[in-house]
Length: 271
Image (cartoon, rainbow, N blue to C red):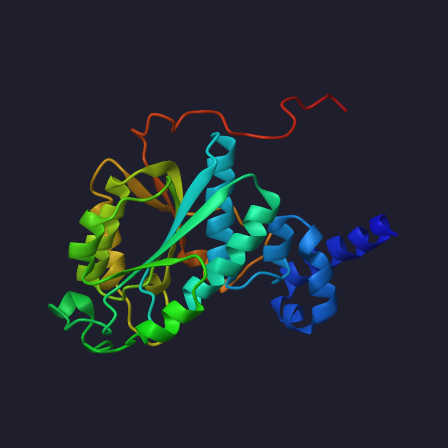
């Protein structure tokens, strides 16, 4: 019975990879039964919230586990109303149920909404100060595990120390200036590779360019030795719009960057 069910799920995964509209048609009872499947399968089938968060969080946590860490940190820059942090708390439950690791979550936000744009690079034609104000008390009452770091990132980040190596970061601060400050997180205790979600590098009507906003901040960061590079590991997931917003931070000078963490067969027999 279990084998037959798994075969049906495997077929469903490949079908949804080809047609993402199928995800919304999967009965909730079926999704509930998927909790016993792998984390990757849960992402592919939409059984976890915010697949772009789940993908980065899972990959970062898997790397931490393979390197022998028992704990890992996930970070969200730009909490706004708090739905992202709540999603990360759900993803934390799924990850800790399948991996021998404890997850710590921190969200950075001004709390009072976006600050005043500094100049044209912050895209003031699209965003203004005060957007996305947080109801701090309401959010704190909902959070079970995640911590809030409220205030300007330039002030809160230098005072913050992660509880464990950082394996996942979401950047959703909208502005060039704020994102440039947030990228200093990679001066902290990080894994040799960190999976990152950048919400504001592609969109709909924002008129993003390589010379303003988050894309400019990433470009300037990449002038150094460490690099943020597009992720190209989505063959199992089929095409989706969020893939282009995933980057991996590579710290080539990290003492464990070259440590082998591969899995699976190491030989291919002659057929």
